[in-house]
Image 1: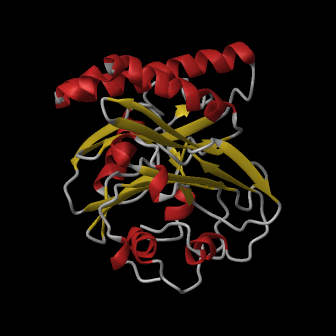
Image 2: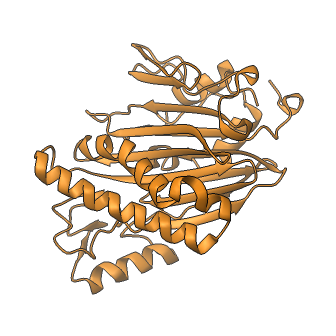
Image 3: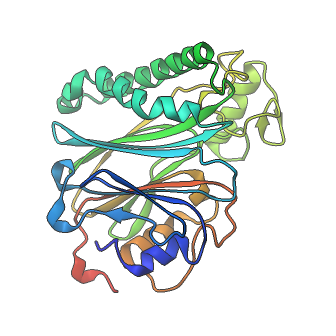
Length: 317
């Protein structure tokens, strides 16, 4: 899958002046540019650095907001063939993301016994371990924010994945989204945790918040925060059941029809549906169009895991 084409670069950032950070695993280099000219960089086929031959691309793109509060993490430590990636969508400052981008991975790996549980394929044990890791990371974050006094009202969502070429495990809190391309068809893997909406998950979140003594004003918990699950947010966690960091955990088998996983913060999905995003990444459509051109006011963070099952000959340039 050729993800370095000019079409893909234009797709997300056509003609937009902003500050971008472009990451590559090969040399772990950060490059800042005054004018965005690349959205997602992925290692060339001859430079596979991920476990199980998975190629990675990631990007952080600042929208109209004053501060970039998102971040992405990609770790190819080869935990029995598994790699790790996560997208963090911060709010009220960057401090929570700054803490979580290292600490959450450490807690997950420790809970998974250095990866041994992943190898054991015990779904319940893996789920309980990852749920415990997220809760522990949240507790540590709240203590750290209080102890340092750094942006104590900050918070963050997190959607993380452990992936091998035959299985994907997602742990999810908040409103970022993971999408899998199966033979070109978008398969949405996560549900957004929001205190508004009429879908089943949103109604469950609204009921939980109200039963905990909270209220919702204009789609915000206590008129304040527009997600129902997140890390940090000390001002809302005066009641432990209003805003929680308890994650959903999904295990998804990956067969030969699984082409790539697209993980992105809500700044992308609020302005582009999953089918459109998957179709472009897969087919490198020639038409212009990008998130910021569609007037996204949010920051956008994106990770792509290319599983290598889409033959380059099938991609129309």
